[in-house]
Length: 120
Image 1 (cartoon, helix red, strand yellow):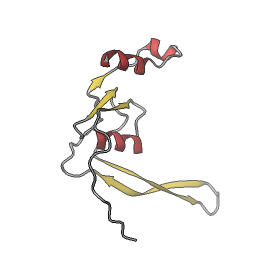
Image 2 (cartoon, helix red, strand yellow):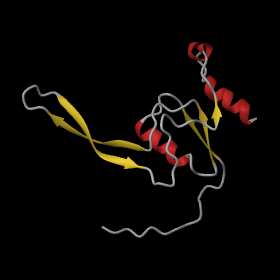
Image 3 (cartoon, helix red, strand yellow):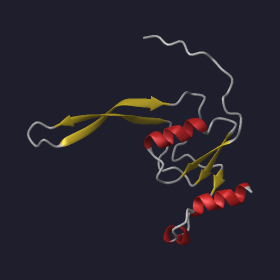
Image 4 (cartoon, helix red, strand yellow):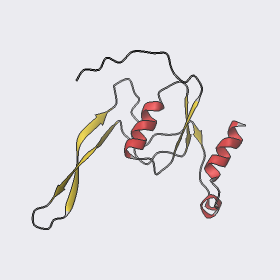
């Protein structure tokens, strides 16, 4: 099937904020990495949990014949275009907000609270 996508003006003209932290992996990392290259996007939080400009994904499940254990294998590699910067060890935020011990112990989302304070 061939789908001809009609090019349109941007549907959203405002700023976009993407939150990341050390738990940002896989598709979340890929999403943040792609968006980080757009002018209207600000990455906020702490460094992502992975780096590099290629990720593996789209898992296939295989059941081992004797043990019946389920094994998941990725069969696709997603590689960023050459125009994208390569983050060797992590994707770093534009606005760093580090999580403190008090943040972990409290019931409030301190990262979001600090972000809203910084944005005014």
